[in-house]
Amino acid sequence: MDRLQSMKIFACVVESGGFTAAAEQLGLSQAQVTRHVAALESELGLRLLERTTRRMRLTEIGEAYLERCRRILALVEEADAIGEAHRGEPRGVLRLTAAASFARVHLAPAIAEYMQQYPETAFELILSDRTLNMVDEGIDLAFRITQAVDPGLVARRLAPCRVVVCAAPAYLARRGKPLKPSDLSDHDCLSHSYFARSAWPFRGAGGEQTITVRTRVAGDVDFLHALVRAGAGIAHLPSYLVGDDIRAGALVALLEEDE
Image (cartoon, rainbow, N blue to C red):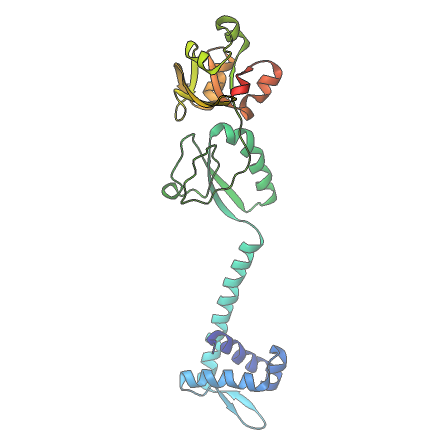
């Protein structure tokens, strides 16, 4: 029999004043209640209750055992309450990683709203354009812009990310506008430090191709964004970062048919 259940029934028998009352309170038959108490006594090799036709009382051992049963049952109830609290509402520290530019544009407002909704949560962010090892770094959740997914991780596609080739009007006025991907070899290109540094992929009507570009400056996404706005060259940047600039005319999207 379940030892904890038997302890609970034994305590109920004592507290309710008898087997019949305990059976009614627990929704069990009197025979079931009797079997549970008898099982405890058999396991212990000791009598917990002295029973006659008129009365029932605890033995000396029964009193000591009841006290410990109550402690154990209280601890179990406390442990269950902790589990219930965790199921009911998120709490604790969530360790995330994402590119700094993505976190600034997309995660910051989402995290602010989440913290307001769940005040028992906290966040630790590792902002890096590098693909970090989630296990080694103790990361719970990673937001990545990639087509290469570690088969050992559970991944879910959230949304497509358009990458735009763009430049400032001042740069295009000075150097001219590339009309096809191969024209980029004659331009100053601003490349990401960790991926597509000198090989930019394109997919147009003629199929997929990779163009080797001349990289004048390599850096992180936010630094490249500042450089391309300043007219330093042509960059390959995510639309969430440069979309507003393109709509405002501060940047010009290039080679859109070959993205």
